[in-house]
Length: 97
Ligand SMILES: [Zn+2]
Image (tube, rainbow, N blue to C red; front, side, top):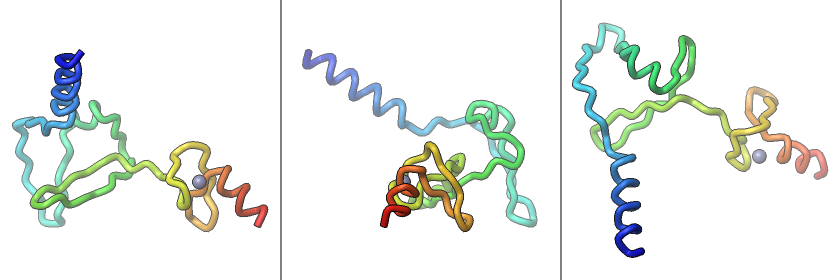
């Protein structure tokens, strides 16, 4: 059992490891870069999809944007009110105030 736990931990570490693609892209005069089609296909990123951009030390990290509830952080069953995402459960609770 102990060995199995160690292996699971190693698998988790490997899953989060940065994968080198070997692809180098130049930033254009407006600061744009093209995401390689292979990456877009792998991550299901389509034209006009929104990406969130993070900084981690000297790394720029981009993630497909997924709106979440302003109050509880859930990503499912969202409605938009005044351009803010709120889940139906939080909307119901607010309406009961
Ligand atoms: Zn909510």
